[in-house]
Image (tube, rainbow, N blue to C red):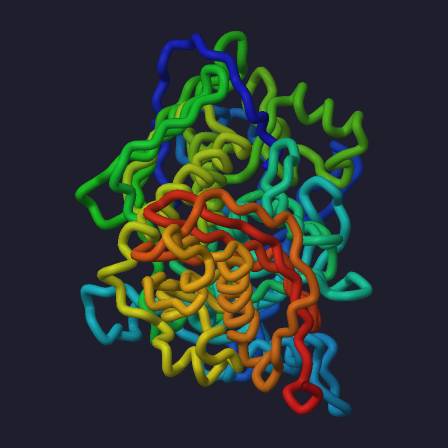
Length: 571
């Protein structure tokens, strides 16, 4: 998004008077990329209601979705007149996808096959697929691949974005396919790097800029698992809203999966502040996400104070939030252009707000700016790696403060997981562990795996008893578990984690190195070691994993371990 991260307080409240468009757009358009502010508005093609064939991937080409205010007076900011509806077209075809010929499949078809897409009939909504238990929401993914083309918001580079189905517990993962060695970047707050006015992720040499609109669309539609392949460093901008992604996902279809959704229910209040900006996460009896956002640029500002309350459902997201476009004040936009950023955009491509309202453009809602702030917040919250249930109150928050809140929520999750170990059913019992690890007594140091999320994260348990053979000599009269064995237990859990994907089946993790090893407290008989392993980077046959061990919630040891995956017959 372009809008500024910080505002100034002090203007009389003036709530939104607009309502959502009566018929939200269900298809995308292509950003024009004009360099001249006086360039004409891009034309929109006619709507096409034909659904794609089951085997045909969805291709959505993004264009400008805005119409200039030719009359000059009907749609001024805050006028209360009828709101302009987003304009878009769905480009679907029964012909072969672009790049496909009789000689072979297109790159999109190759990507779809690699992701495990089945080519089944797309559904308009995953709600048609009944979960096994109606009270337990199931994870969801796309039923077919979707493609979006356009140019990035800040960098302006052309990019193709292919959103692919993914298996349960995969999460949302980006992949930079344009690099010499493709890099996968999980959409997780630990991978966030500092960038002004947007959310950017980095793993190793690969980064993804301005991912918040795509993540917001996935969260708003309830998509838990997807692999997103990009041919450039930034996601396509479209019209600056989330609708291009929403339309592509809906056209591809969404299906339930055979796994329960991961949800974080806020149970303790959390507040974060930066100057006069504030975010609060509060418990709620409602089983959904509610957001109250107060947007206040203060005086003097052409943008009046706006307050908007929103309860997240797929329907309300599509109608009320997804069409809201990114915005900036005229002075902010000029400063970006002077720095060489966003030069491919004009006020007709995104909202630029002057003293008299939008320049060469019109609001879709009187409260469009605050709705876009909610759109960004939903996308940033999805960097938690799961849906959030609770109430969020925001005052002038931007991406940096959003990320701070997500890190606090993550700490809350980690504490809860460590204290709830005893009552949780393991995802891997000792028999499963024995089938995956070659270690045996007395060197098998993982008793069970409580939770494992693909190859991203795992939680395991080692119960330390006086019967451990090493206590006989370490030390008689004052038994303490050797620190090297604590690290060995962590390395074993990390080995289980990196082996837990189909592409690594039949491969054995060989420990290459250990770094940043620290022993924080002694471990004695009767302690229960809670082991955590989180993948920092997994690329090709190499994996780098950060590991921590806890006793009663206190950090006992930590280490960063590196593995090489080798074929079993080579061992």
